[in-house]
Image 1 (cartoon, rainbow, N blue to C red):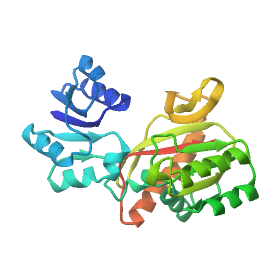
Image 2 (cartoon, rainbow, N blue to C red):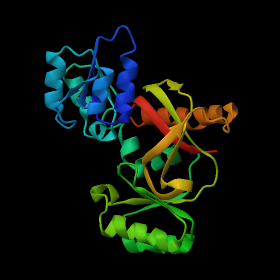
Image 3 (cartoon, rainbow, N blue to C red):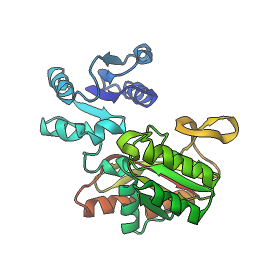
Image 4 (cartoon, rainbow, N blue to C red):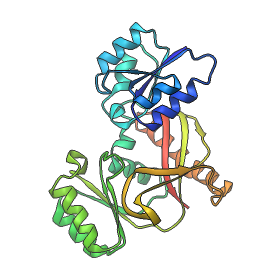
Length: 275
């Protein structure tokens, strides 16, 4: 079996290394990959993640059995749709379903619609309106760019001034381009964070073991959020009962909500939760 991975980070390296442990797998290619993958037998390709037709041509030429997509941007750009149109097997949500990761407003609306527990929020595209809301709500408060920002689009503001500065950077300075043309402002929640991921086949949910990731750039949980400084699993301080409750009250309703919208979700579904 020959496999293709789309992406170039540590996530794709780990997935490729694991796939090669299966005796059925004869080769794993990664586009674009990174040099560190070579030592683990992953073959890297000089094809960009957004070059869908070039990737499809490679998959057909090499008779790739199955493609795995790591990053969110190719999913939002419709790589799954393009591969499926070409008759190729690929793992991940299509463009419509990927909006659950591509827009925080979309995700919050889905959660509200399906009565999934979530922090109170409002969305804004106007700086003055957003500023007035922050002044009304006070701090701490959370400001999020609506779209993708490489894990850096969330500001947990300890003061009103910090929140207003985040709004200024996102809405007026367009710090994240079109991704911060709209912002989601959420209430600040206190608790133990954990990440719950699951394989989803459009209807059924197969949860993984939970993890806890740490996003702050500096020691002692200080500094801006990043895409992730480190993570560990299992998470002993989160009970199995809490995890099961999250599966039933968050994951299952999310999957059902996507079905009801006509965009069933296939791939790995991620929920960032607070117990």
